[in-house]
Every structure is written in C-alpha cells, then in structure tokens.
Amino acid sequence: MTASTLPLTAAEITTHLQQGDFTAQELVTATLERIQTHNDRLNCFTTVLAEEAMKVAAETDRRRLAGESMGPLAGVPFAVKNLFDIAGTVTLAGSKINQTNPPATQDATAVARLKAAGAILVGALNMDEYAYGFVTVNNHYGATPNPHDPTRISGGSSGGSAAAVSAGLVPLTLGSDTNGSIRVPAALCGVYGLKPTYGRLSRAGAFLFSSSLDHIGPFGRSVEDIANAFHVLQGSDDRDPICTDRPATVPNLSGEMDGIRVAVATGHFSRGLAPTVAQALEKVTTALNATRTVTLPEAARARAAAYLITASEGSQLHLSRLQNQLDEFDPATCDRFLAGALIPSSWYIQAQRFRRWYRDQVRELFKTVDLILAPTTPCPAPFIDQTTMDLEGETVLVRPHLGFYTQPLSFIGLPVLSVPIHLPGELPVGVQLIARPYDEQTLFTAAIALQQAGITHTPLPLVVCQD
Amino acid sequence: MIDLEQVRKVALLARLELTDAEEQQFTEQLNGILGYVEQLSELNTENIEPTTRAIELSNITRQDALEPFEDRESILGISPDREDDFFKVPKILGS
Image 1 (cartoon, rainbow over the protein chains, first blue to last red):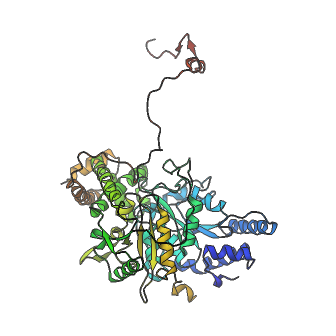
Image 2 (image 1 turned 120 degrees about the vertical axis):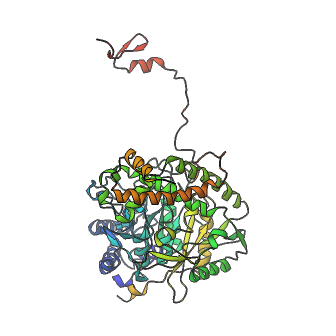
Image 3 (image 1 turned 135 degrees about the vertical axis):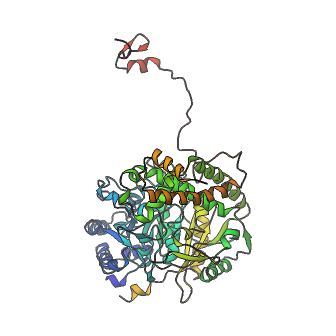
C-alpha cells in the first residue's frame, strides 16, 4: 500500500481491509503522505490530525485482529469542512476571528456519527469565510484551486471538501449547504455532493450561517459512498432542534427506475446554460428517459428571497463581530454581512411570506412528478481571478451567480444530489437530481442508474495523476 | 429609494461604525437589495403567513399554553421563604 495506489472509494477500502489486503495503519499512512504531497498546491486542508488518525487506525487494526465488531465505514479516512466542531480543535469556520476561540469540547454530531461507524478523521478543510461564498477564495487561508485545473476555483463554500475528494486525498468529506455550498463545488470539482432534506441530518456542532437555510451533507466519488454516509448520519438529535425524529432509512441501491416520473425543470433553470452544461443535462435527461418538463413558478424570485433571508440571518448571527471586529473579516464577506445588517425586518418578513407561497406551489408539482432534473451551475469552474461571467449574454458577477440554479431549491429544503458529468476534453459540471422532501431514496435510485450506465463518473484529475 | 440619512440611522441603531465611503457604498447596495424586495412585492402574498424555515417543522418548541398545576403545595414548598399560601419576597418598596 502506497500513496500512489490511492484513491479508492470508501466501499473499496472497507472491502480491502476486510480481505486483509492492507491494514488501516498502512492506509492512513498512505493517506497522510498523499495529503502532504498535494496539499501545498491544492490547499484543501487547514488542519491535519496525523497523530490522532494513526491512533484510531491502530485501534481499528487491533479490533479486526481480535474479531470484534466493526462499523460499516471501519477504516475509511474522512475530513470535514472547518466549520464542524472537532473536539480539541478550534472551529475556524474559515475566519480569522475564530482563531482565538477555545478548542471545541465535543465533536459535531455528524463527525461523531461517522467516527462511530468506524471512519477515521484525518483533518479539517478550507472554505469561504463563515460559509458566505461560492468560490473558496479565502483571504486568510488562501484559495483552494480546482484539482482539474488549478488556475480555476473549486467552488464554495465547501471548496476544500469537494477538492479533497476530487483529488483523491480522502474518499469521504462533509460540507454544508445554505444556498448551494455543497452542490456548486461538487459540480465544479466533478464529484457527488448530497444536500439532504432540510432538518434530515443533525447540524449540531456545525457553525451555522443562516439557520433557516443551513444543511449539512457528504461528498464522495461514488453513489454507494454517499448513500452509506447518509445512512449512518441519520437520526434525531437533541442538540439540534430542527433535526427530524423520523426513523433512519436504509438506502436501496438497486437502481430500479420503474414507476419514477422524471421531468426536466424549465423556465429559470433553462436560462443561461453554457454549452457544456446543456450537453451534460441532455445526457442525463436521455439516460433517465425524462420526456416531460415542469416549471417551478417564480424561481427567480425565490433566489431574491433566499438572498434576503441569508443576508439578514447571517448578519444577525455575526452582529457583535461586525460591531467590534469589522477589520478582521475577509473583505469578500464583510460587505455583504454589513449590507445584510442594514436590511429592514419588513423585507425579511416579505421574503418569508413568499417562501411559504413558493413552497406550496412546488409541493403541488410533486403530485405529478417524482424526480426533477436541473443544471447545478451555469458554467464550468471560472478562473480564480475572474470576477464576472456571461449569463444569457449579460455580464454578471461570478460570486452570486454560481448559485443561480441551486438557491431556489435549498430555499424550500428539497433534497438534491449533484451528480458529476465529464464530457471529453471539458471541465466537469454537475446536474441536480431533485426530489420531494424526505425522498432521498429517489435520488439514490436515479444516481445509481446513471452511475451503472456510465453517464456519471469521477475520473482522477490529470494534475494529480502526473505527480 | 433609500437615502444616506436612512443608512446612517440604521447603522447607528445597529451600532455599526461605518466610514463616509462605506455609508455611500451601503446606500447603493441597499438600493440594489431593494430591487429584490420589489420583485417579491409584485406577487400578491398579502394573506399568506410568513414561514420561518425551509420546511415546516412541528417539533421545535412546545405549545405555549396555560395549564393548571395540580400540586400547589410542592411549588410553595420549594420556595426560599413562604407565608401561608404565599411566596414571601424581600421588601423592595418604601423604607
């Protein structure tokens, strides 16, 4: 086992470990070497927990030799966006301000659940400051370049989480999504990224951004890995009052699409697609035999309302920091937080009023359809120093518009899986699979069908292969 | 339209220290955001109650409802001081 034999998916790792092909200690050693080799250039990790990971790996090997029971993710290395609490580590949330906070006293629930399933935490990952961004160009910790083309962005705000999986540094990571922060980087880095139903997975111990919109979820290189992570992350949690007490479901990965009514989103979601994105969507549409279309009414207004709610809630959360430590904010987030702090409450309430209307309208749509397809981003990854992009012939700012297709969906908490499409000679892009609330199963069914048909895949970036 | 004075007033209420340039910048930004609000106002949502979450959740808080408590004596019994059926508190008015 050497660093160059990686990457493996989480499922492959558990199989190899069970077969005794290598030990968890050999695997973690190789993983740490791989991180050390690539992180200078890829800047995914802000913290590497080498010593702790090796200790857990030794214990994993001991348990296996002793014939003790092993969790479903036993020995799988994973890492988390640095807004998740890791006991003994300061939770940065991408900020300089948080550096002076005391270390977290307990793991975030999601971290604890992955550990309880046997996975081995190896570190924390870069992000936009306080999760306010779609680019992961962080003034304090640097940019996380796209492993498929390091002159371009990874997307954000969970850019480190997507890039680390894309480059094969770890098979599994966690991120958070308020307006698209899991789906956008998953698409631009060419990996799977799941934003489950709002409240489906516990957010306890994750540094929130906009509570009424925040979700957490996994990134992976295969549908099996995403489904297995989702499976162990489920469950009610007293530490997160919005976490559902619905019983955990066991994902079915048969890929049997019979009876699933698939439609392509039109209107807002058919505007402004770059040719690569349009081709990717067409490929998925054909593979899933989606012959009908649906229009989410007023999706553009949903974006406007999502912006107002995000800016208002985020600014209120950070108000004391804005009052007292303004000069320590990342200039890229500071302005938007300040503007948000000045938004009158009547505007916020109007956005929440619209949200209920829009949610009821979309709920009606799901009476006639089970799965909706939409692009994840308007274009492949922009350049790191690029500030504007073309959308429907108009020049618009990159940062807010990467969420053009993701914001109207998280706004009402729908479960969405961004699946990776690599067209020959092109940068990866993503397609969103969208289901009704709590129906993650339909996402897994469609995604496994696409994976089995070879429509979605996660080839290793050339830049990593060449090292 | 939002003007500079309104931004100054809100910034003061929020205890945000803005420079002259920032006040000007945020006046422009807020007018941009006002564009979003106007988009929303074009829809008739007058009779719709605002929500607070992406998905309606019913298990966050208990109902805030009055309910008689049967065991009167147990509550009086845990008070630091009592007199008959009353809680006794230090005198705070007069000398």
